[in-house]
Length: 246
Image (cartoon, rainbow, N blue to C red; front, side, top):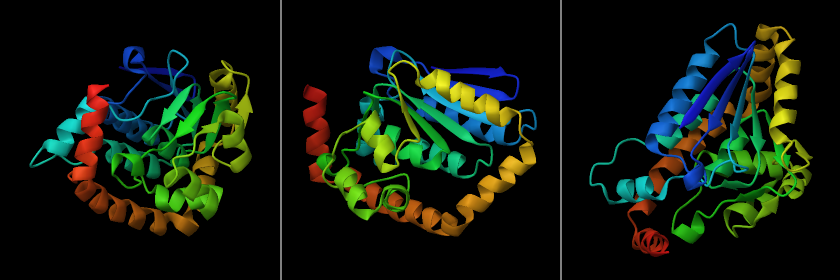
């Protein structure tokens, strides 16, 4: 359900589960993490492009996988966070094309990428508090860094929904383009990077991220602990049950 294609120096990863609005399962996260890690060590790859099929980026975590983890007495480590860590450790530039829904981790993962191209009517939303949870993917640090603390609160506490243009205006997205054009623009950006010296790109990305790298790593661990506890809370269990009945 992750399509993998390399064209020249550009690796394209496409989330392909349209019947579930590209909701991400454990297997899909593992595939994405493995491909990002592989690309990071492949000298032939200068840029990674991530997108979804069917006019949707991703509806976030698969609900069935999420419920199973919430009720497991001995849950496995989060595959979603392993993917986030792969992005954090990736020195190869990552460009994301967002059309339609970018829900939950579909929004927070963008904060670990280098360029985000959004269709103008794309929908960005995080609903952690509504589910009795807390933010994840180190978003309690990365979102204030990118958007400022007050805008971060709008998304992470109030669950505000942003369009592609609003995401661009507040810094969550790099560009807003006509609906249907996000992937074309993302691939064009990737081709520009493909023509640049690979090691200079990678060294520059490391330097850009160095000032807050430790903060992001610490936030990931803080959130992991609290998120795991909240996942077993009555608030979260009730919210997941309501969603399952819809």
